[in-house]
Length: 352
Image 1 (spheres, one colour):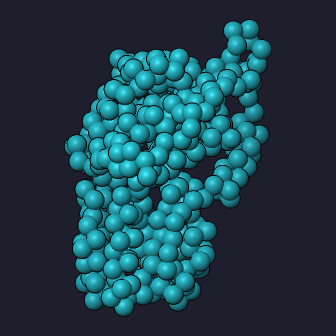
Image 2 (spheres, helix red, strand yellow; image 1 turned 45 degrees about the horizontal axis):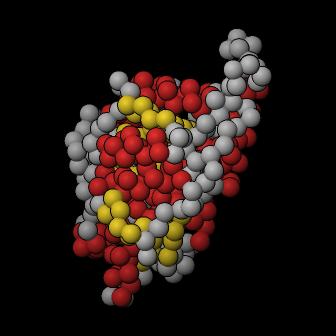
Image 3 (cartoon, helix red, strand yellow; image 1 turned 60 degrees about the vertical axis):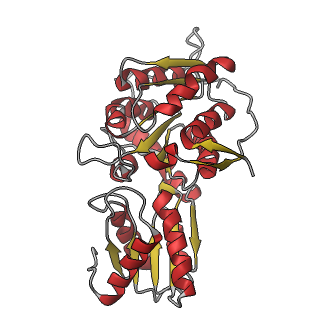
């Protein structure tokens, strides 16, 4: 068992140990400790840290570093990530790898400081202009967050796209035992700018967008085929399956264990990748399942749409899909069990 460490500090250290050597960003609760830690730690390993004048400046500095073949990243929350969207579209358009860390906080609009999962639709749909997607990874513990940071950089470079670590404010602020990875030797990629214009770029007016669209779809199809990740349990005989990610996913697993001990046939799917959504997990579910229940920390229900689409696509059946949004915070096992009993009694109506 590793040492106790705060989530935000563990994520920052994991990025350094993954070979990241450039960070630019702007402070915002509940992600600020990532910046604070990197403000001295990057200098110790020969990297560069910049507290930019704004979130927009920060993401544009990341574009510059990524263009030079350096592992670069930024972090923020809520409205800060919104401000970074144009820069993320540029990274996507130029097929530059980078990692964006979002410690999600609740808000109807600009937001509060409460931990939540209300950024799901923005992160999984590509929050800026254009046809693009980001790989979205969702940890349920500090240990998993550390492991996913390294994976985020690897996947970003493998597919030349942006990887988003979509965590939650509570995970960044809590402490857990964690084993950090070994230090990875940083490297610079051959396709980066080298001051000699060795790798010439095609100008915007010389590009064939029709041809690029074919290549883009081919890349995204490969990501969807090869990079779906999830954890599941008891789905083979389940009459109802909970679907939940992040910290609510962790609570859902505990609730499922208790309900199984009480004689209820329930199971769980915990997406680790929100995009690509783990459709393959649903192929393992009991074909006679009665319904799926999403447990979400937002006000409107967001992941429920992906669950319903996946059920229709994979299971080809009109299975009911339920959602009782818990707005913010981390739903307790008790409240998740109450959701289940509301579904069984008919008190909670299906969304789809």
